[in-house]
Length: 196
Image (cartoon, rainbow, N blue to C red):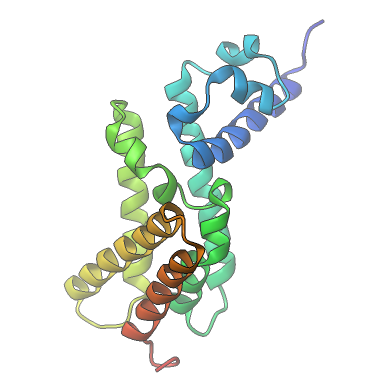
């Protein structure tokens, strides 16, 4: 039975969405293609009709994860009186820590990408880091562009690091302390005129 182009595209999108979630939950090498396709409700046989390789899917899934996270962050900062505080409070949160499958690919997959030899994946992660730095540079207070960029880089590293560490520690109290400390530190260290 021939499958329509529309169904093929819907299946492809479902695989990318499933991979975006599962790679963030389990890591790039934490799930094989058979299990990934099964989780998407499809058979393994159709994978190579939709993707060149697992590396091709990884790049598309990370891109999807980034796009989804960008939309989520935009919803939280748009219209906020203090967009930096809104971004920090949403990113450095129990919710983000507890739901890696829907969170930031940098916090979930940066270490995987650093070990991966696919130039397309490394380039994508470089672009994602650059985009987050640009966003934060626009949001942090100050007038000097070089100082704002330095502040943005430090804030991004602190945000990502807090999520990684809070997920790694087995003690829920310490995990929460990491989230609360970093969130509070970033917001109080970089107050805007409306939140000062």
